Image (cartoon, rainbow, N blue to C red; front, side):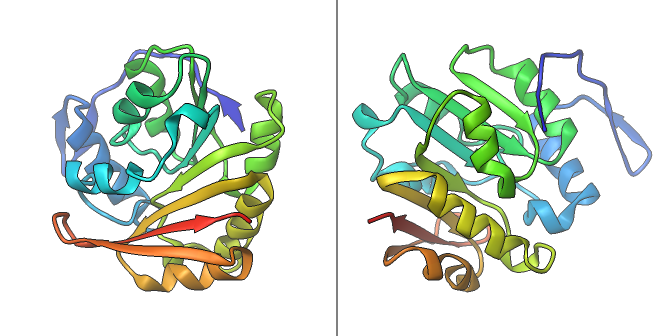
Length: 206
């Protein structure tokens, strides 16, 4: 896993066309290259973002982690709400996304990291912290390689502080099977104003 630094962005080639790397083009390209890891062909809606982040107590948040940030659909809203001394760690396995995030968001609180969500404990420790306050995930758990979803669920429960939350948005309710073994309380919501409509979960660490 590596902490990315800004690099000049290349152009994307999709169906033989050379296109500028706008967020939508980047997201669609990422889906074509890694459909199992991206899970959707378009970014989340603004209503989903507000709904998902609604319960976050930003005043008490010092370390916010996101799995699968993609092209930064949530990033601007998180940085706008995060305290000035907070840290936002974004973990993705797609180097194109990480390079794009590093080039787009020049904020000292923001750390885009190339790596796996299963290694979140080491990534948080390498950033100089003992735990995370909130972890956000849009990873398609039901299509991840066998065993990986269980590892991510367990690692997330361990890295969160007492009272922390695992925020999960997903298109399939099967994601609950991966987080329920590790969290006693899970609140559920639904966001119809998204393509496709999304299941929302807020898992609380006792």
